[in-house]
Length: 204
Image (cartoon, rainbow, N blue to C red; front, side):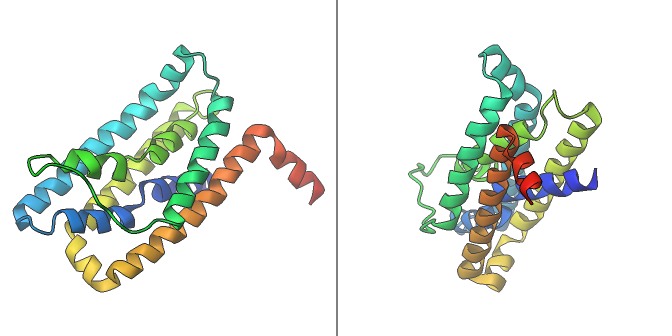
């Protein structure tokens, strides 16, 4: 159980990428008042939580309704997560958006795709497979995800101070490190889906 909690924590942390979200948040809210920045942080996490919890509750049901097996989704999801990891590693660090001045940045791009990223949505569906994990295990994974969102909220509230300490370069380095971890974990997803994991363990 502890292994799964740690495994899920690393996957969700890497796909949500709180450090990268903090860097983007700091840039987009630089001109806001402290009160407006605080409100934006809470709204961002609230919307992201709705999206991710909704994915856990309905994601697999929607896949079943469309006739997509979770095995196929696991392979394709692993590939997408791998590409997502590569994007994190080789990102240009240019959080440009075409949002209008009246646009609510807490919805886009902060809640989605920055916090509730496509990678995070894929990940939470895969690691809460109804055919593999019990309700208790899925509940623990959901709480794990909410805890990471809670950590992200704290980081967003102190984003200005954090960026001043680690700098944009430090945030970029940590994002790339998370990308490498995510790429490795995505390969594990694909190996597990295809049964290659058994071959590797047999050979070793």
